[in-house]
Image 1 (cartoon, one colour):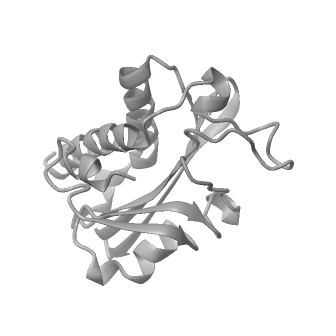
Image 2: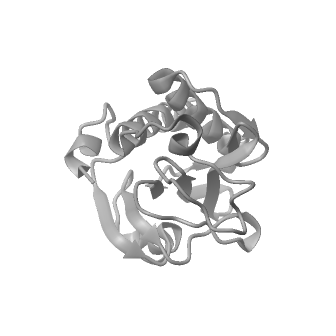
Length: 192
């Protein structure tokens, strides 16, 4: 993975610091367990996750050539400013794919994206608060980009950009566009 390409995204702070792993249990778990050592806007990226986190305690399968990442934000804002944030993150990802490739994804509330009625992306947003102030937000994103085959138990319900179009996609380009969109979204909320 070309981390420099991601660091050169048009962002002020998201993605300027990246922790990259070939294999990890979960980017979300790593972000939470070592949050104090990571600066605002750090992205944890892995080629493979052995224990990726989905919603409701489900496992998110991750193989290489996909996106498995967690964005760490330290916004120090009132929790009210985060209302509907996960849905906006989903919209930001949808917009990134539409802008880059003219591919129309659909949001399945509250935190999935579908392509041709199959799951292509899952979002897991978690936060830590003290009283009403949000100290940290962990935005976990699993996006099936170039995966060709899926395990038997999910092959009827999961897909990837490659599987639907038979084309290979630039993972770093997708990550860059997503983080540009998400940074605009969080900045809008911080400054509102």
